Image (cartoon, rainbow, N blue to C red):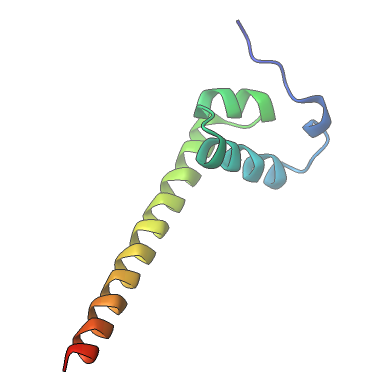
Length: 77
């Protein structure tokens, strides 16, 4: 069964539709296919953007972990 397009979003600019589809996938548990169909965007484009965000988040988490480790080193001295 085909997922209906969200009528309120059909006139949104593409950037806004992609951003909302990403939010639905990452925060609300939607599948990429469901979000892409609902917001009228390419699943491949959506997948690429989500991977980029996940890489950025992983790098941020790693940097935060390094900062915590350095902070703990300084407090234990």
